[in-house]
Length: 337
Image (cartoon, rainbow, N blue to C red; front, side, top):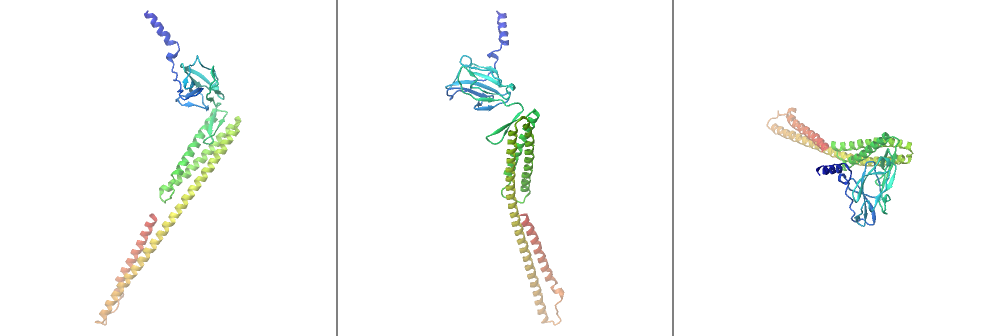
């Protein structure tokens, strides 16, 4: 008896079946009307419409009818297709994998259902050495190349183009609206120019690598890449020119205002120094002359010596120099501010 049980255990271990299967659970059929092939991807997200899938993609197929899953096998079956292979199944679903042999093929999973009339999504497997490029936010084109190296070069150029475009938009957004004369604003403007140059180089590389697709007959797709990327580059140049022109205009106006303020401060300080210095010098000289005139009433030998006005003149000169110094300080401060 013990040997028989051991033999049965060994048989169960080696015979394939649902005991060793890793089939995904059936899709949620709630809310599904009529008979529909409900398909989900490996992440559990529902696949609808026409979807482009590359070899290795996994799907789970469940047939739902009026909100409930139907039994696989007794009620419905699945036809073979070069697009997919069956991995495993449960009583209500089948797990599939897209295969490389289906490159360039398409299949409607609704039409692949046997014994039931069902609606479902269409799976399209791109041909080998193909790359899809987004021409706009809503449309895309697929380019087919002769070799894998050509398709990889275009894919790398496409990634570089997208990154350069994103970074250019970011630097433009960081450019301040109100320009200033500090180093940070100048650095922002320089970054915009650098980002534009990289975007230009990335656009050239994208167009050059897309040209290889013309050898397989995809001239229209390559032309779309060239035309659309050129339009985007022209628009980007216009945006940069507009933003930098506005930035430069604001900066020039600010600098002109600063220079005018500095000149006014310099002139005011200079004039103030001259007036104060001259007034003090005249006041000292007049006071000394009055003292000499008073002394002459008692001593006729008293005369006005140049040394008598040396001190007043020196005081006036010092005040004049002080006015000039104040003008320089105020002028420089105005430029800094």
